[in-house]
Image 1 (cartoon, helix red, strand yellow):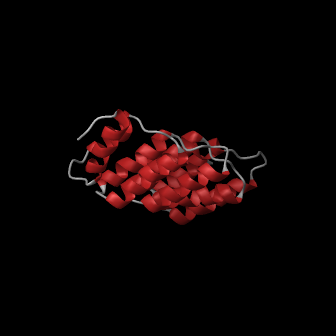
Image 2: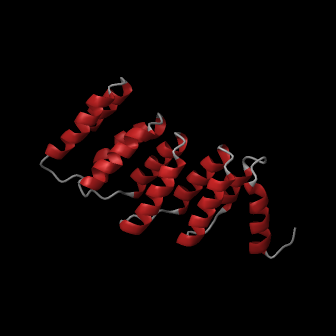
Image 3: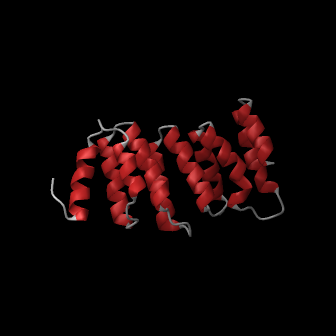
Length: 169
């Protein structure tokens, strides 16, 4: 069933893909996040952020819990497609309401997209959310900020590094 949805998306038949997605509901077995894995992979590769949102809404409606792998692919699709606000909203929602706790790589993916778009506001929002959720930071976090040396968030990073490592500017 997943591959039928992917084929429909590949051929540009979004309506057919949506109808097939709704057809998942008619299966007799209970659905899990893994039943959507190949579709999430396609949406992350394409990227197709709108269909990934459609899948997520369907899963929420049917009470299907997200897993870490699918949530990571969903964030990849949203970030590659420039849907940072939606990525923030979903990562926040996942952290508050499901058994999946957004992990550092999800935040780093969002942060990387913020720096690509050179959005200091979004980068600060991501760093604040990371602080609020106490997910910590890693070398990858700082690397994502440093990828674009023109990004104003680099000065914020410099201050953060000095404070956390006890150094000075």
